[in-house]
Length: 181
Image (cartoon, rainbow, N blue to C red; front, side):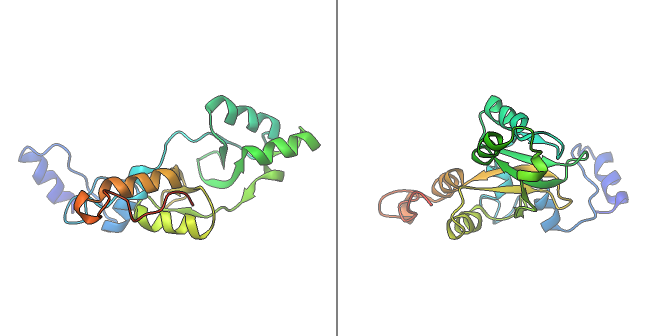
């Protein structure tokens, strides 16, 4: 919508007007609200867990493990100073590395350049990806590479089951989606 149209809407009493130059997919990719025929289709951004622990490249694996344990997570997202995702660190990897050398840096142990997905990806597509790649979670980032959240396979499966009306399966919502990964 143009700036002029946005100001006109505000003058008519609309208060949540946004001037937005990107396309609809980019809007959804930032996890912004949606409406229309497919508004009920669950997207990764709506299901992803927020507040994933993060750390910088210079942290030790011991420190990163402490951050994850304190937060109750098994993943730490490695980010630069402005929040761009550079890597991913799993608790199991930090514990094994810390046994060898607790002063190893996160940079030496992390998974570099992990696969990331946009908040606009349908949850069903994400579930299928995670099953094919035998992973229990996926990083969700904004188009500019900033951390948005972590989508867990179990949460994706739950969202799909909840989105299906009871009459779509004989045994209730999600019955034709096997549990697990």
